[in-house]
Amino acid sequence: MADRQKVIKGLEETEIMLTQAVDRGGEMAVMGAFKCLNSVTDALALLKEQEAVEPEVEVMNEIDRLYRCPKCHKCFFYEKQKYCDQCGQAVKLYE
Image (cartoon, rainbow, N blue to C red):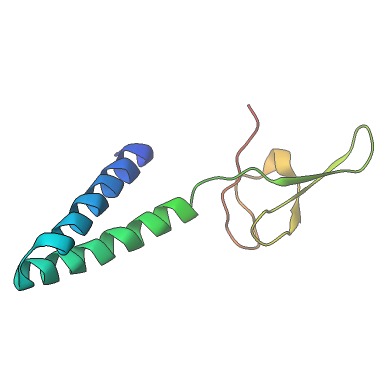
């Protein structure tokens, strides 16, 4: 299975090269590169959107914490969840 960060880095590099090709090339080359560029840009946006993020933490007292999804703000029991059950956002676990 491909490493997520490696794929994202490769897509980012491809996006840069396609942008340069669109800026330089002839009509057919530009049209093909532009179509590829749009696909790569969309793929990057989807991959980055799925990256795990740290939850919002609200300190209730010295012991209790309330965790919320940073995307939809739903409360959840952080230690047990890797994803928000409301919107599906991946959540980083403290290590």
